[in-house]
Image (tube, rainbow, N blue to C red; front, side, top):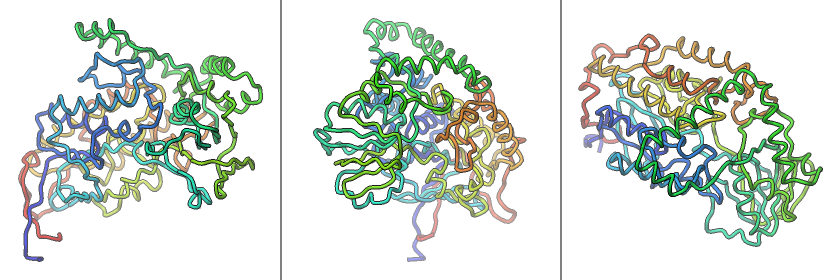
Length: 515
């Protein structure tokens, strides 16, 4: 068997994930003339988080015309803020229009990535086979893997348990007593969507969110006709939405005290729906608005005011049979527990599967804190780029803007490899990574995310904000427009090792079975 040989596929670029980041990377590679790439997707369809999150009421809190690619405008968005179904359909449309499907390998979860320092490529193991790639683009995204707390007694619970990102559509909630754990962006959509059909709903709230009205409405047929006939009107609409959010950034990043007026508006929004002073007290945050993401809903507060809803201002700490117990001792009998407890953002599981040049995993490399250069490159991991990497998140605008900025960086990265010629790789200099992150964290000190007095998922276990970008999208776009080769080491094959074909050429390599 050891003497038998088999072919292992080699591609120039392997992209991990087929959400907005992965599909965007695929489109950009094609626009750069690169067709020798694959998109490795663990599921059986494209869509990323918009495929996985199919819970009742799931929708985006960014306006539709801004939450779409600039190179793929959609004149037919049905609402100002679109729901999950329409966003997923949009991503399917992008995959079709840009002819990406031949590149996509479904049901191909990546189990291991290992850098081969002799041949200067990544060895990739998936559940469906092996391949190698000159460059890997990880677009797995920080909202990919649900985080469920380890609650004592949960294994003995006789009812139904699931996470909001893994909704069980076969389970009928009608007439059931339900515990909703968490009050983040998913929970405030789920609660009003299920409140009318359940017998009782107990909401476990560790920290109340700030909730503003959602200026949603149906986009009229006339508007859609106009956008189809005159495409510049779609661009203008997008431009206005973008500009307004750029103007808001100063308050979040440099003058958090100016957000007091916004807090007053949020409190007024609460008073309109919540008449009970005791309930209002439970729902009023004690931190500066914006410290956690500001949530948008017109139906959350009215749902909480209904007689079949009980708000427990304490986290879930124990399950005894069918009884759920809060930290303050509150108990409730329930038939189902739904966790809206977020994702592994600062401890992404895929980091454990990426083995760099030094033999350590990305998770081990990041043990002291998650960081990269320009949200894309990590020292010791040559030719490995991330989309929506550390400190690229936004607190008030569309992540698609940040993704497109990182795609610019990817495009220039590939150009630089072509210019270098032959077999070459780029490895971020540790000093450059450190310098970039020092600047980011220095800017972070004044932001509402660091000074607002809350404990959010933006912060890692050390209290460091490794998630949010402390500036405008314009600034980030400028910072990622070009690759500065001075920030990288150019890596060549070791002396005495014969280099393979130039990295731009696709090839099949013969390797021994079991290698």
